[in-house]
Length: 252
Ligand code: PGA
Image (cartoon, rainbow, N blue to C red; front, top):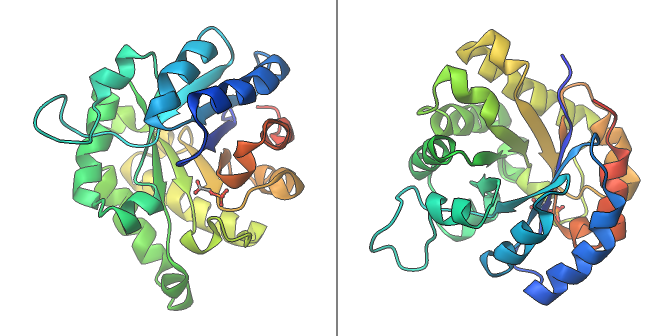
């Protein structure tokens, strides 16, 4: 089953709109149609600029979070229709920093994933275990709970619209990368969970690895049979490094 590689740049709380422009000036000319699907996820404040500049290019844009309601008294939040209005293509949901630092719950995520799909935004759902959970052999139980709860409100027919990012929390921003065996094993486990929902769709869902991906380790990780791309943080702040990671993705 061939799945088009998906490589996302998660800028987190980095880059002003002017700095996003500088990145795109260097990065966009290097991208051509037919390669992996590349997506830039800037802060909300640079999102309009990135969406506008990426329109008509092979590169897409994504938000780093959204609310499940369309409007209302939710100070500090943004909604799916607001993102669509800017021409945004996708939205990261459930990044471990949102879960750990800002109290994101699986129950809210189930509603967010459903709302994103209904609205026509591609959800990039992040899941992953802590170091303590891995040490106590709870990785499978944690992944199973997150994947099954967060996707509970998605119809089987829509599952292939979700991109899942497996990001072991102990590998995010730490310089520690999961070994190829660990990445393949956990991502295969997630695909098997989806198989429990719908066998045919499980082979179409793209599942990414995230956690200290860099030009030096990207090719090895991206070549793994169940790894369909990468969610890149630190190394995605530099257009040359991110370009090298995109270039390391195998052809579909
Ligand atoms: P990192 O971040 O590449 O800096 O480890 C990945 C992520 O948090 O998405």
